[in-house]
Image (cartoon, rainbow, N blue to C red; front, side, top):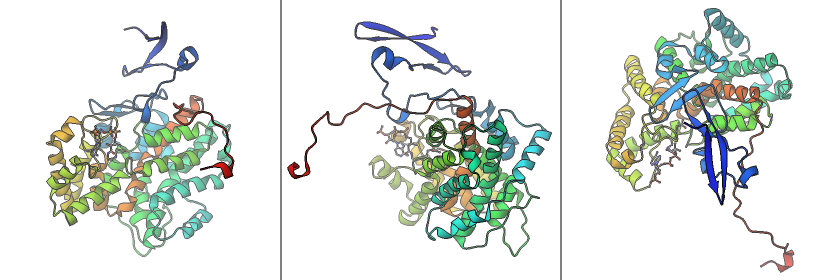
Amino acid sequence: MSNKATLQYGDKTYEFPVITGTENESAIEIGKLRAQTGLITYDEGYKNTGVTQSAITFLDGELGILRYRGYNIEELAGKASFVEVMYLVLYGELPTKAQLAAFENELTMHTLVHENLVKVFEVFPSRSHPMGQLMTMLSTLSSFYPESLNPNIKPEETNLTIIRLLAKMPTICAMIQKKGKGHPILYPQNKYDYVTNFLYMTFGNVSEEYVADPVIVDAMNKLLILHADHEQNCSAATVRIVGSSHANLYASIAAGVAALWGPRHGGANQEVLEMLEDIRDNYNGDVEKVVQEVKDRKRMLMGFGHRVYKNFDPRAKIIKVACDNILAKLGVNDPLLDIAKKLEQAALNDPFFVERKLYPNVDFYSGIIYKALGFPTQMFTVLFALGRLPGWISQWKEMRERKEDIGRPRQVYTGPTERPFVNIEDRK
Ligand code: ACO
């Protein structure tokens, strides 16, 4: 096949290079389109626009494939720890034993946050949403490490910023939950690994010895791995575009948290649980009635549909099985799981969903697991952010290493054409 694409416009023909990735996905490079033809491309919501060449994550929405650095998500979720996957996503290779030990040690050495950062929590009203707190805390970190504001620091200094952020994220997330409950915060303990430390700080109690439940540690590792990266989604694209202005890492990641918060993106995991509770409490579990309301456009089916997956979301498949196993192991019998399964079946058998290729996404079952593990609903999207952090950082790092230009889309202007200024006394 030709590595050029031809465009005929007016009485002229133009040629544009076609670039092809390692999985044979091809793209027409249109950087010179406007200079040559006066045209720009128009693609609302970037449905069909590639903005970078990335070596981190591959996904095929038609076949339901997701790989980090070439490794299938099913294998990673089954065989690796979250810290191994963090290393893989960030540095491109699975760590050796020595590399993993060194990485874990680095992460352990930076888990504490400055005491003044803890004081920032005092200003939040008791009902403030955890995602708003997380955004604030992450951007506030830049005040404690002003050297990170310099975009020209050496790679090893950037790496220290990355380690600090990864190490402090579980501490901050756990503090948000503790503060929300009005409980004293717990400081990180160096004897624990990354995930266990997070669970200890979140569920431990100052007055009792903490005993980690291996079922919960394993479930948490799996969930975090499944969320670790997802190529150019709304939040990752946000992190990249904010970082492309040479904004510091903390600010760029805080912007990613803002993007993730929305109910059409990561905020859907909270909305799914609230929807299932609504079906239990106000519909007496009648999922057919809810499906009909969705078809009548009265509501969205949260946790369903995906911009890229037009086949099963592979993460949802893994989470569904994990959900059954974890609830069984923990001895939890949650009627919401039955409602979720019935709802899924009702939707998958309905032509409305079949024709639109709407399948459960990663958020459909994750909330039921988080609930079983003991997290309050408002914390769900924070957990998504905790998992996604290595992905966002890798996207930011790659963008900087590629020395990408500042992100600056164009538009087709549809407002008024030039008109004279009207003095205030003459305005109608
Ligand atoms: N419930 C009901 N109808 C839906 C849903 C849904 N969850 N999702 C899509 N549709 C319908 C649309 O109304 C549209 O119908 P139409 O062609 O008759 O107008 C059709 O399916 C195609 O939908 P689009 O809006 O074109 O899909 P898009 O790719 O733009 O949106 C999105 C994807 C935002 C994820 C959407 O499916 C959605 O809002 N889902 C619910 C929220 C959710 O679960 N978000 C989490 C996504 S995964 C993640 O971010 C981690």
